[in-house]
Image (cartoon, rainbow, N blue to C red; front, side, top):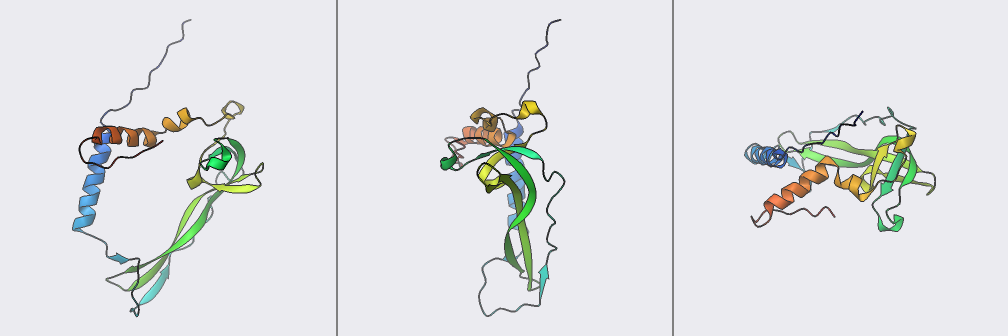
Length: 173
């Protein structure tokens, strides 16, 4: 029985659709801005402080094994076995809504992964990582794997289409 090869087709209009969506969103934000201040001038009037509830650590897959390839040069593109801790708060931001004078405290979360070999926590924003679901998936994350991520493909496609048109270019290498 001959094995049938299935080729994945890339939707060529994806980059155009994404650019259109981002353009429309940008225009809407310019025409109807939410008036928020992130840089404060003192003295200022505050009518209240609102703290959004701290998001719980995402423990759905906590403890699962992951492969993680840190981006920093010191790791020499090596992939490590890691243990997913969960999405944890990494910073807090304060915003002031101009119309109400209410300060709002907002947390930002990111995946945290403990890497036993390094005895260190590596965050999602500083690495390429993925959950290991089977023994076969326990492999190195390669440059090819990174190049095949949908948003990397989209950024490269948008960069290629924008060359010579005075648009912003994104270097994904």
